[in-house]
Image (cartoon, rainbow, N blue to C red; front, side, top):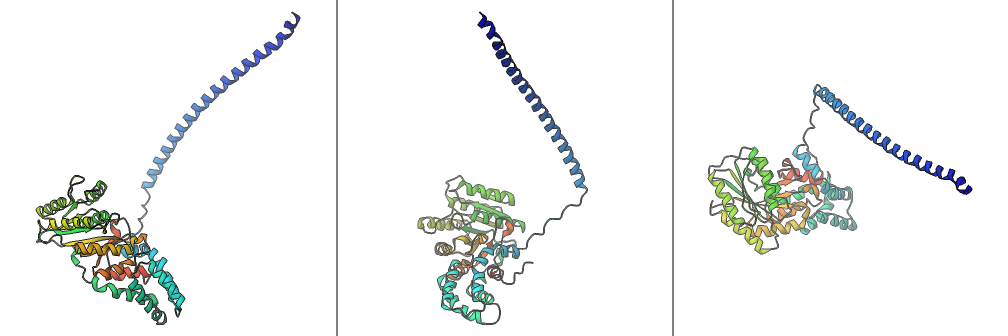
Length: 382
């Protein structure tokens, strides 16, 4: 009995400790809840004060003179900038080697290796290597001599470019039909969108035929370009016969008396003869609407593919008798020099050159400006 009475104070102490713990826990929960509400209110107040501050800043900014936009780069400046990789990776190295040297045999080997990275044809590389020792010993800048050498290889073909590619004038003989071909990924669809935009800006009425019926994404991309340029597009269901779409597009262009009818085509591997035959069929079908259509057949080439672009061009030319080339993506490759070999081998001129994604990044191929940008000579950027 006495032991129970002695133990009772210990039991009461334990019970009291439990009550204190429970009270403390509830107190912390209530305090945390109050802080949370307070923080929420503070944040709401802060957001209101920021919003008021932003409105005040906006009102103040309206009274400030607007900052003028940066001046757009000229085409020559964009071209020079876009060709930087080819210029730095190839021709700057060539210049360093040939400037003030007698070009010993080991230097010739080094030059040969560098020139092949530019994807010049073996024939041009061999001929240029024979000329470089003379260039290094003559007065003046050696790269100017290189420019004259390269210019001599392609100038005759480039003289065959027709002015109507660039200068729109109403045609009383009906629409000019332009067929665009190339492998997937070369930039065909984007190039067609840019061309349609350029012709429309000159006041031309343009119809685009979306004949790449195998890739829904290609038609959708082309549709975006056509809507942006406000030109008409003729399309068909996915998987439809491309030749039928081409026929309908040319017929539509003739019906509404359009100035241009630009025909997109499905990307074709130049190594697949059956696919190339299908392109030839599409070309032939258009002549049933307009006897001499297509008036131009242009091949879009990706500069990144280098010497492979030459093989593409040879096969497309064999099947379709190309009238011109469009050289794209020169800003992403050190192989833009392959254009020289392609033009020399085919005798087909480059009509347009591209150095970017925007409409203004596709422009007239000017041989002199191209070689200046390629070699880093007298960059007339204005």
